[in-house]
Image 1 (cartoon, rainbow, N blue to C red):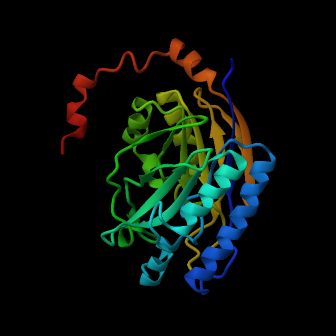
Image 2: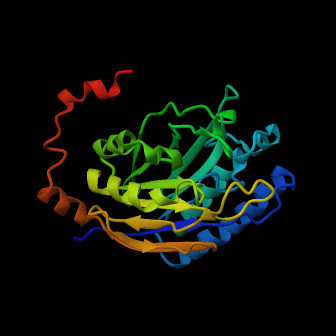
Length: 289
């Protein structure tokens, strides 16, 4: 039987002033995303990923302690609990990127993974943390992830995550490929002028090198008063041959849906046996400092 996956990505603009209390912004953005998740349910999406820090502005544009108020525990926090309810309601795998505070008061840029029956499967913590002036001050807020590169065995297939800046490091996606990922998601927040020239190059290259599907998400619009650049949207899916098979608009909220033929993975791997022909014994110098 053919393995078909109806997958979705949500890109969205900030819908509340950054001068508002963090709690007000969080509620407004969650409400916006719940409406889009309901649209995904109506369109029978079975696996859905949200954008990086989906309920917040991209607050690493500044170094300001007020934004620590956005953090919550995972999975104990209210956002993860809500996503579990929605996943169960719509029989949909949901990847929800949030700001996590762990039991020791350490903060991570985290994506919670919830199965189609509402079961919390685990989380991925962003591994590579940028600190690139001006406007990408993530090390002010986040510690590097310490959970490796897990692949989650979901109702729809094996799912991996690499968050935003992780996409610049091919080792991250190689680890996901070796761990068995069939589809990977890259929730992001990136702006024109800085990384737009890379946007349609890197993820298709990762898809080809690892012979899996990639769904990558970017938010949209300008976020005042910081205005570090235009978040240019263009979320997309690409297949194991590196072909972009669906792409969203540049400047509006959107639910992007694509039908993915997971049987293509094995078809491509029969032609290009990259994993079979690897020579890991020769790669040791690559990971030596």
